[in-house]
Every structure is written in structure tokens, then in C-alpha cells.
Image (tube, rainbow, N blue to C red; front, side, top):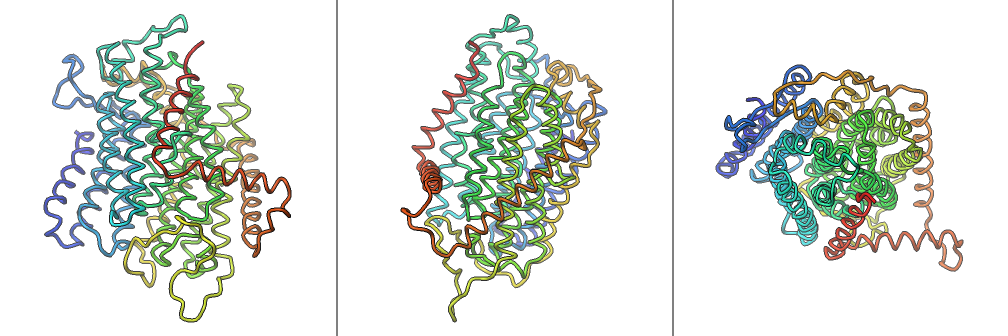
Length: 607
């Protein structure tokens, strides 16, 4: 009953707000939405507390596994934890929105609650087709939220790019589901997994199984922003309202990673290799970090940081071991809290100064010390500051993948963490420690500091608050504290949850038989000398990246092209090429998606 209520409650309240919101006063709409999100958070937390001890499974309508048409909702500990993260982030986003938006319609709250319901349903469902339905519902609502300020052409452009790319990925996922159904006659994840048990015993599961895995995962990898499916993400984050970005970067992208992991472990373990996911994840970690450090628009910078960290999450999943999955779980939870806090800090800057271009904000953040502290600590957490969840995730995952011989993961994670954290640290140094730009007497708008076309953010609110109210500060502080505290979670339960998640037979027993397997995996150990050393190196490199960025920004006059060193000219040319690749044209993005599917299929095929 708890699982049904977790999904049904926000749907019912969303329908109520959509129908009656116009006639309700604004405080009533805010309180109703907040109370609903708080109730869902409590329900998911209760599910998380019960999941390790008793089966959390229900069949909708009472149609059990024997009927052949039943739809299960199942919550193992990792799924319950992810639903709890989604609900907590939604609660924080709604609390921030209360004073952030001076004018907002009830349909915004209704869409946020519908988004929450679709996220929880996607995490809990044990049916492949229903996972697609809830995933698409999530995409449709996200499309509407991205284009909420539809009066601005840039917003419509970003929303269309998001909607078209996501739709293409969804069609491919649906085609993959059709292939699986044609092979097994089943749509339940657990039933499909049992049906395919023993398939490919000789190492060749067949082209149909491989094709199904590639097609299904394409849609999830689009959502996870793996390279080259990532192009939509920065465009959507740049135009979506800031509270919506909290959900996009904090949990929606991570749900794409969860979709890949759940589908593989429940259906395809041992049938297909995960090297393609590892390659695309590593590419996302590198490209996201490079694009991140090239940005001055804070929301785009954080969006590319999300691409980089989602890439590391995908590599952790692709390692294919419960130990690496433990590290990924730490990392995902820590990243959700930290990135949500950073986006809320960006929203505070946007509300106060009507811009999030770091060059326009030089030295203007001194009057916002709490927001500055959030940005500083958040940046350090991205570099793996102990005891954050990102530190624990780095440490546990690195130890696990080294046992597989993946020596390259350590320099990859250090480089990605250092560059993305250095980019955010550079923003903190410029905005909170830099000297304000001189402004002409009587000038009221944001100063122009050489921003490029398309990098300015339009105001999301018509009014500017004289000071930040506590309801806009507290959510960011709470999310950051949660992201820090994640690393203190005991390693034993996390490792057991990962072992249960990665056991196809245990998942089938939970869903089909109502039997809870209690694994006893070796506990995850984040506090190792190697983990602490990796954190220290990453932090030092992040400071170096930030200092270099500040020195480069302080140059008042760029050198003439002919006077530049060959290396500088090559870097400049590569930078321009990267910007050209992220053209904003949906046709280019569709072409890259096609190429990505080809690469994914080529690397997944067993030769």
C-alpha cells in the first residue's frame, strides 16, 4: 500500500491543483504542494527503512505473477534510496520556489508533483513496458517544465531540442522492448530475467538479445547524457527555471544511469558486455569536464559538470561488480545533494542580479556570504572533500575497478573531479573574492564583460528580493549537508544493498516469489589511504585549475593571434571546434545520436 500511495498521492494532488489552482490563493497552492512532497519523502524514507528487512513488493490490482498481466512495484534498498533522493530534492525545489517565484501559476506545482510521481514510479516498477511509460511521462513533464517560460524564443528552442532528442531515444527503447517481448513473451523484468537464464551459455546470446539491450539502453543513455547523447542537457539547463534544474541534474540524469543498471542486472547479466557503457561514460567524463571549464554561464557550467559526473557513474555501473555498484551508490547520492545545492545557489544569484554570467557577477557576491559558503563547499565536494558522498564514491569505486585491472579509472576520476571542481571554485573566486567591475554612474543593468551571444540568462522573476529569505537559503544548506553526510553511511548496508541489486535471481525471488534474499557482502570501505590520497590530489589540482582560470580571466587584453604560442593557438582552435559541435541545432544532435547508437552496437557485439 505504501508503494501505491507514493505514486498515487502526488498524481491526485497534481490533478487537484491543475483543476482548482486558479481559484486558490498562492499560499494554499504552495502549502499543498510542499505538504505532498513532504508526505512522499516520508513514505519513501519508510520504504527505505523497511526494504532491508521485509519484501517491499505489491502487484497493482491484485493481479499477481500467475495472471500474466500483473504489474509489480518493487523496492529493494537501492531503489528505495533513489526514490527517497528524488522526493527530498523535489521538496527542496518546491521550498526554494515559494519565495523565488513572485508570480507562478499552480500548473507549475502540478507539473513538479507529476514529475515526482513519474520518477518514483519509474524506480519502483518491475515491468519493462511500464518503465518506458513512466520514463516517457517524466520526459513529457520535463519538456513542459523546460519550456515553462514559453514567451522567450531561447526557452522554446532549448525545450524543443530536449523534447526531440528524448523522443528519438524513447522510440529506440520501445523498439528494444518489442524485441524482448517477441523473444520471451514477457514484459516483467524478473520474468524476462528468469526466461533468459541459461541463454548464451556458450558466450553468444544471439543478435536479437544484443540488439534489444542496445536499443533499450539508448533511451536511458540519452537521459543520462552519455556522450554523444548529451547535447540536449546544457541547452535545457540554460533555459529551464532554476528549481527545475535541481531535479534535472540532481536526479533525472541519475535515473538514466539507474535505468541502465536495473535493466542490465535484472535481465541481461552475463549476456552482453558493458564495455560500450564504460567507453561512452569515460568520454562523457572527459568531454563534460572540458566543456565545464570553458563556461562562464554558471548554469551551463554546472550542467556540463553533471555530464562529467554522470559519466563516472556510468563507468561504475559498467564495471559490473557489486563492489563498484556500492561506490556508484555513494557517488550518486552525494552528487545529487551537492549539485542540487549548487543550482539553488545559482538561482539565488540569478534572483539577486538577474544574471548568472560569472564575468558580470565579479565581486558582487560579497553580500551573500551563506550562498558563497555553499558554492565553496560544494566545489570542494565535487573534488571529493571527505566525508562527502563523492569522496566515498570515488574511493570505493576506484578500489573495486582496480581489482578488474581498470587502472585508467583513477586518473580519469581525478581529472574529471579536479576540472569540474576547479571550474566551480573559479566562479567562487571571481564572484565572492574578485574586485567588482567599475560601473558608469546611473548604470542599472548587468555590466557587459565580453559575454558571448547566448550566454546571458534572462531573469526568471520580475522582482528582486532585497535579501534572501530563509526558505531560499535553507534548502541549499540542507542539500549540501546531506551530500556531505552521505559519505558517513556505514559500508555494510550499502554493500549488501548493492549485492542484492546485482543478483538477478535475488531480484526475481523478491518480485515473483516475495522472498527477500539477505546477502552478506564485504562492507564498502571509503576511508582507505588510497582514497584519502586521491581526494588530496584532486583537491590540489582543483585549486590549481581555479587559480589558472582566474589568472586567465584577469588578462585585460588578449594577445594577437600571430603572437600566441603554437600550443595556445591549438588550444584555441580546439575550443572553437568544441563550441561548434554544441551548435544548438537539433539536426546535428539527431545525427550524433545515430552515430552513438552505431558505436554502442559495435562495442556491445561479441565477436
